[in-house]
Length: 199
Figure: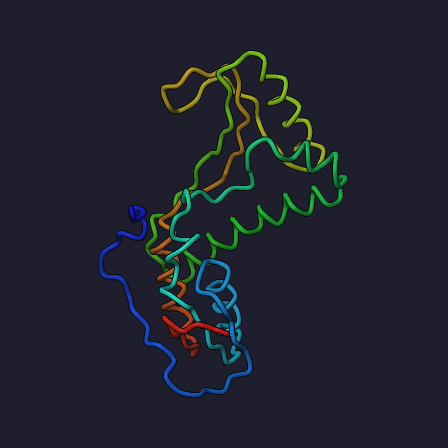
């Protein structure tokens, strides 16, 4: 099986398995991005936290991502607006925007070296017939409070009839980021156990 670029990182940190009973007020199950982030915030706030991972931290979905941190997920917001309404669509959009800010803040405060960079995100089409869908998506995002742009020129050499551009998005090395979160969890008094399955 091929291994992702991110998981091919050298000098991976390892954590022990849980071999005996331990008591804690909070147990986080799963060492992916969500579990590590949850354990990070809790341990930083002073709560006793144990994180359990059945394999290795970040090895599965989180370690095989595209490494983009965006509020833009394809042509999605027009559908969300039409199906769930402006309030839900807006909540979803701003939750994603807040997540970008939160990750950037953690990277800066904890000095996590994970190649974090602010970037623009695009969805583009090579077909003139699809341009109206792009424009409709832009209208939908503007209705819920976003500020996307319609562009025809991309920073890569591809044919483009039109694109939606979300500015101030980001990219990073997700596995290095997760290792940084793990370091912070233990720094703040939390514990991590790998190869520990929860039944």
